[in-house]
Length: 112
Image (tube, rainbow, N blue to C red):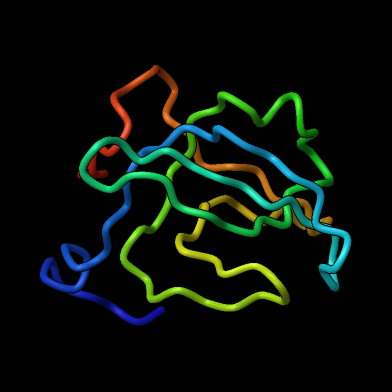
C-alpha cells in the first residue's frame, strides 16, 4: 500500500449528499443506476452512475445520504456524464455496500 501525506488526503473532496433521483441505466455494461445527488447549496446537484444494483433498489436509494468524491473531472460513462463518485466497499461477491453517515448531516459537509 502506498503511503500518502495529509496534503494528498486534503485534496480529495469527500462530501455528504442526498440521492434525489434514481433512474434505470439499461445501456450500462454492468448493472447500474443513474443517480442525481444533492450536495448542498455550494456544490449543488451532481449526476453519477453507480454499480450498486445488487444490494439497493430505486425506492431504497431515493432520500439516502451517501459519501461522494465531488472534485474528480467529469467522466463519460456511455450516455451518462458522471460528475461525482459515490463511494462504497466492494464485498468478496462483488456487491457494493455504500459508504454512508450513520446519522443525518447537512448536505455538502466534508469528510474530516
